[in-house]
Image 1 (cartoon, rainbow over the protein chains, first blue to last red):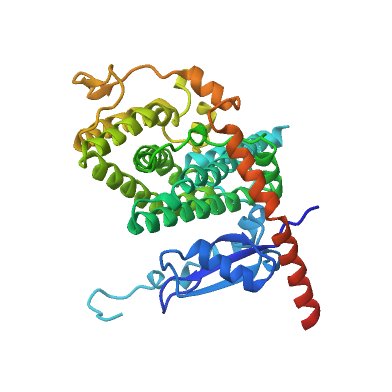
Image 2 (tube, rainbow over the protein chains, first blue to last red; image 1 turned 90 degrees about the horizontal axis):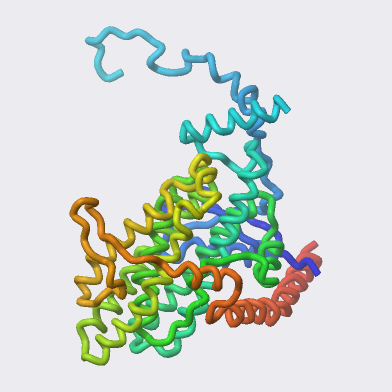
Amino acid sequence: MNTEFPLWEVFIRSHGGLQHKHVGSLHAVDATMALENARDVYTRRQEGVSIWVVPSNAITASDPADSDAFFEPAKDKIYRHPTFYQVPDNVKHM
Amino acid sequence: MTQLLQLEDRFQARIDAEQKIEPKDWMPDAYRKTLIRQISQHAHSEIVGMLPEGNWITRAPSLRRKVALLAKVQDEAGHGLYLYAAAETLGVSRDQMYEELHAGKAKYSSIFNYPTLSWADIGAVGWLVDGAAIMNQVPLCKCSFGPYARAMVRVCKEESFHQRQGFEIMMTLAHGTPAQHKMAQESLNRWWWPSMMMFGPNDDASPHSAQSMRWKIKRYSNDDLRQKFVDVMAEQAAVLGLTIPDPDMHWNADRGHYDFGTIDWKEFDEILRGNGPCNKERLDARNKAWNDGAWVREAATAFAAKRKSATA
């Protein structure tokens, strides 16, 4: 009988003030077990102050095969960067 | 066909440019298969590796030693889980990997088929076996496959505690009573050659190495890593006041390395064939743990389903 538990993705906030970051995945029957397993597997040395667990199949990801086209709109917009604009050297604090 | 060649060229170009390959990126079938085999064997090694050390938890000589050993064995479980998860990103299921291990079809590191006969063996395993493992694993932190490389960064951070606790045990015994010193020396005698085998066959007998190097899964050859291990351990054994059981080991000023004797590869092959001192015991223990846990997995699944239907 296939009894494999569902897969969860684990995100950890390492310190207050930082964002949660993906650290890996694990199997668990439900969210409570996923949180407890994530604590035991990924924070044995106080690596986190907060954990998110998300069912892996709830994540929609961009397709790496299409990434050239997908990210193309941002490619030629150098005017979105501060260095695009000319400012005389004697202008301070800008 | 030409399209496949183009994909392979582009893939190799990314590898050559030190870009990481992620699970959903295109990759050659052979790259995927090689990684599934290597990562799952690595995961199995972590899990089976808990057995020889778990053997001494209840008999650790002090509470300090006991909590350290417990934490170390718990780390090995964690390492196995990081690695299984990395392998799963390549499309193999956890159950599939377990089944292959339990059926005796999957390999794991030959070192864990040796018994831990005395408390000193826990010291020797930490010092030598984890020492050899670290040398193999540090280059894997830069492996071309992202999830494997990231898992290895975590593993390596934790392994350095393992090696230091092993060395401390050896240090205490080696500088203890004559009986303790003897125990440490005998343990080094038992574990030295099996640890040397952990780097795998000599380069000329390692057929897959060249391709793995091209794919940047492997960064250094088996013999290069083994030499590095010998050079480091020769110095550390001197600090311990213990003698490495190799009459051919001596400093070679011309090479700038320690020379060493020939490994008994027949012993290595026998263990790979399943005929090591503990092969059967290890597999039996894994199967028993899996089978005895079946009711827990079923109960957890049933409980989760019940709770879900209650809140629905």
